[in-house]
Length: 386
Ligand SMILES: *Cc1c(COP(=O)(O)O)cnc(C)c1O
Image (cartoon, rainbow, N blue to C red; front, side):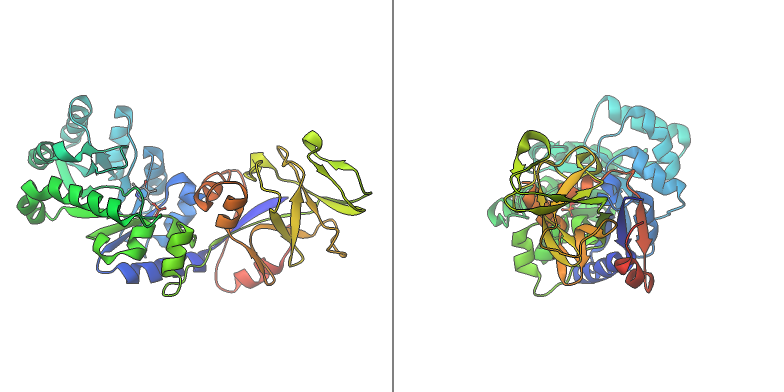
């Protein structure tokens, strides 16, 4: 295999153990959307099933995959669901996110009635992302209705915060106030029915105890990736996150290229000296962004080497001139550690003008993933993919 992702399950579980302890007694739900942020949906679900209170996914089919894998934790589908998916979700015992009235709600109730058990739901209130959710100022009547319909089992009410990652505290406070105002008319009933309130994703869960409420929905931090530089700067001195994912390939060939030769499409790079150019067997089809900044690097033999020229569809170039012993077959690290050198997903994201979230979410499902734990990690880290 010419490229692989290695997922360190000990690192993953270590992150969850520390985060769950930090937020306790709030429940910790791990977010597994986007193929578990590129880490592999079912494998991560299995690895964390005993450790978390529940899982969040985006799509109905993701919930079904977890269910079919025998994962028995509560699952919440965060995204929109189509009527034809309702039967399967109900059978799998998954809860869905509800902000609807009208036809979809009727459909939901009909499925629950036909199947003889209420549908688990979490009501979503929009407080400022302006995405999915009941408008906060008009939410109370809909919530009251959800509470009275025998076909619904209202397990949670939640909202999503827009700008905690940027430490926008004013807006965050306003969102929380809107959420609380929306629930106030039903407060006693929601408490009596033990409906869980949740608003925090990773950054909020780590930064602000007041936002942890009954549960947190943590995605990116679960995988050991900081939600933002601001969050890392504020939290890293008291909480360790260990990246679980590393991404490796190898040098297919190393070419001697004289000075003043162009490399790659568009002739965007010219060698300025006699150079040794290594070819990587992965490109943007494998998730390596095409728009990398000029200072982007990969790791070879524990050294940073520049990624040069345009990233192609299935190939890319590195300049290994300064790594005299670099040769074909050498392991190349795009994300992760090689000796003392390290590249984080957020760093690769910054070189691509984006964030770590996008880098890992776009890693193709078809890339081979290898899961390692305990002693296995030591040998995996030093071996070269063949
Ligand atoms: C993706 C998502 C999360 C998790 O966000 P992270 O920043 O990755 O922790 C939480 N809640 C909702 C509604 C989401 O869509």
